[in-house]
Amino acid sequence: MASPAAAALRAIGARVTPARVRVLTLLREAPTPMSHHDVETALGPDAGDRVTLYRVLDWLAEAGLATRGVDATRVTRYAAARDGKHQNHLHFHCDDCGQVYCLDTPPPPPPELPAGFQLQRAELDLHGQCDRCNSGKA
Image 1: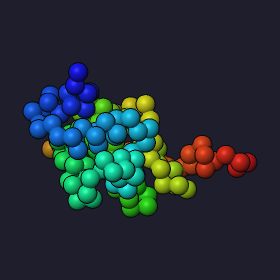
Image 2 (image 1 turned 90 degrees about the vertical axis):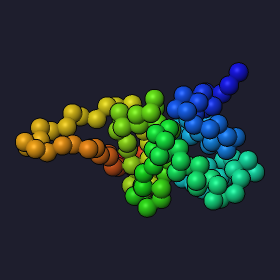
Image 3 (image 1 turned 180 degrees about the horizontal axis):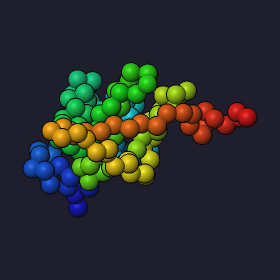
């Protein structure tokens, strides 16, 4: 039986490679977006070489199976797209540790735009301290 990651690759007509399946599986199981280093560390020897890993991460983002964003510390992080639509929820950025959390909360509707304007995308990120960084603060 094919893995869900392999099925997602096949569903978009992409070539199913071991590297793509490993990385996409990891991103789908990760509770928070991951940096290249996070992915490399988590996969260990199965990560392959660094350049190939960068190419796989970027390819997944360009194919719509993952998203790519830069956190407050200027680290690029990747997350699995949910049904190819990662934009359907908000992100919380911890200003202390730099971690980014996907929230199961839809974004608010966009404002009404002036005549002739066309919205391409909207970004709304929440910032503060995560529960780990906030514990012990009064």
